[in-house]
Length: 163
Image 1 (cartoon, helix red, strand yellow):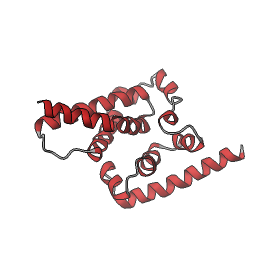
Image 2 (tube, one colour; image 1 turned 90 degrees about the vertical axis):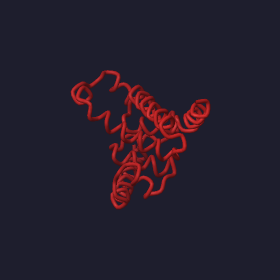
Image 3 (tube, rainbow, N blue to C red; image 1 turned 180 degrees about the vertical axis):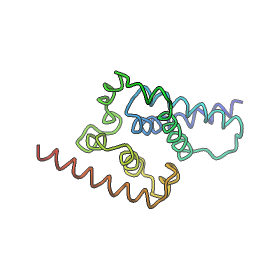
Image 4 (tube, rainbow, N blue to C red; image 1 turned 60 degrees about the vertical axis):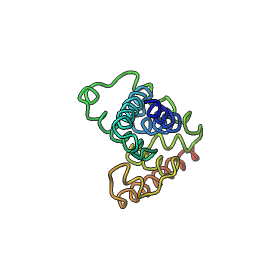
């Protein structure tokens, strides 16, 4: 039991910030991202208890995070209710977690399908094949999303420079 707890705590300490940043990039809501982090690590703990020797790492955690984020968008109340805090939380910065600069501002303005791929590629350092595994998309789709996302970011950054 002690080994299970130690493995869990080690993984939590190593990757909780990465999971939080990814969840926030999907939801743009700190509170919802924290709930997702909690769900992900509950699943991690259950998985470790079930199979201690299973190779669980950052990629596994990020894939579970993506799935939890997608599931959170399926919940009926979320579709119908716009929380007042959510509008305010859109102003809460991913920039604090990332960097407080024009690039982070542009990243936040992108639609989530581009924002998530760019975040995983540039901020987390994943390769296209790894991102396709995490997001359950074909590598060709990831390449297209990266290309279009870069174009959109370039346009946003150019607009900011011209203002």
